[in-house]
Amino acid sequence: MLLAMIAALPLATTCSVGGVTGVCKDVSLCSDNTYAGLCPGASNIKCCVDYYGTCAYGTCISEGSCTGTTYSGLCPGSSNIKCCKPTVDYGTCTANGIAGKCQETSSCTGTTTSGLCPGPSDITCCTIPPPPP
Image (cartoon, rainbow, N blue to C red):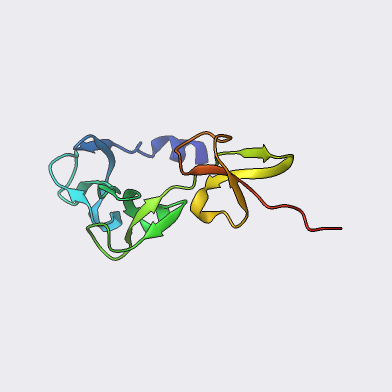
């Protein structure tokens, strides 16, 4: 019986606004961006898009959807819409025999060495020498 109930559930209908994919659902379940006339069903079913454009560091999305660092005041919409700079793992590196991490130069508290990491030019090998014995 449970399998029959699951099989009877409707699949989510997708919609598109300016090339960004959304989901058709009840407007009460949507965030700020809702668009009428793009979904089948009653008038309360609208295209819901959790996308608010781009910003200086990435994409404007709801704060809870960001897996990186958020910045306020750079995006339209309600106060929970933030500029999201995603966290990127650039991997590890070795400089002068010391293991390090590839990261933004500005966030390194040790020694930086250029040319050892993939990504943009501000990604360098950050090493922190071990403490003396």
